[in-house]
Length: 401
Ligand SMILES: Cc1cc2nc3c(=O)[nH]c(=O)nc-3n(C[C@H](O)[C@H](O)[C@H](O)COP(=O)(O)O)c2cc1C
Figure: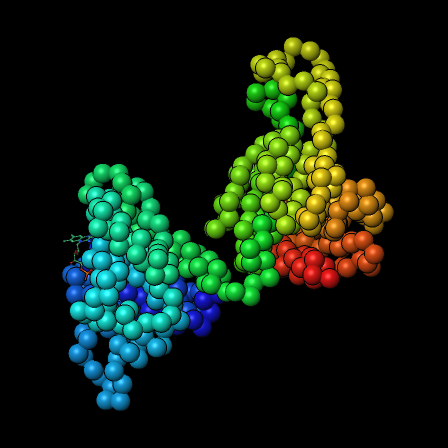
């Protein structure tokens, strides 16, 4: 997403200016060409030399330092820009940008920039809440500048408040997300995709439960791919072992019945639903209110069927494209074909979990895709991200048929 993109990083004079050095590194790591401009106040916190060494480019600080006879440097840099990032953005530079003031190199170049401008405010919470700053940020948003939300936490002043600069990796993720949202031709733009992930847990008593080997990795990979294709993604997750992917609404649930209830809440607005979770087929008929004691020689727990979420979704289907998963150890094709029909799914992604490196808890997968009136499509062993990308490629093709 940032590969070969020309990024101009504007560093203004906030205490978080030191973090901008790491931001340069993170942007370069993503393949971006980075040039840095600094305000005079920023140079009180960090030297231009730091940014020159990291970016391997001259650092721009002075409007009248014209080094090339045939170019006006602020216009040249503005024209070179694919994306401008102001981080940290002080209350002062935000005020100038909102009002078209151009009294130093940074603000003059920003005024001449036609590329998207990504603003990362960082300041004391009282400065952020000041009506003038709030007004200026509203103006920037109205001017189609992207303003990233500052973090709440321990401020340099020694108290808690909103105004902290997010960590550089978080800023980079947000920039990538912003660039995705700018692309008009993304296939899942304005589509709502619901994805379930992980193995549900069915309680036996307050300290014990029954679950399965699903890690949730396939569902999380599908969620990230759908997001990058422009979708608004709701990820209903039965695991807390994986970190929340950026730019995705994550809802954590535990049991099969909670998963069904949560899916149903947003089902009407969904365009695609991917049931990648490993939902328990059975749950204990009774859940003991207190921990079961070790009094008896043997223990019998009676199980009852849980409600079949995919079947339920199939019954209530309107416009939704329904994708189900089938993890099997034998008779893959016949189970998958039967599931496809009975559950009224548009696609069943089947994998043979008895094979090494396939399915539960692995980073790779090998699947066969079944769709009504279509020959099975094999996707050979590859990373779960690559499998997820293939699944959406096939689903999108099918949806526009
Ligand atoms: C120690 C110190 C820390 C500062 N931290 C911030 C800050 O985090 N955010 C902010 O908006 N201003 C901060 N300021 C105030 C700005 O440096 C000041 O408003 C300056 O005029 C900003 O100039 P610039 O926007 O051209 O960089 C700080 C000032 C000092 C002395």
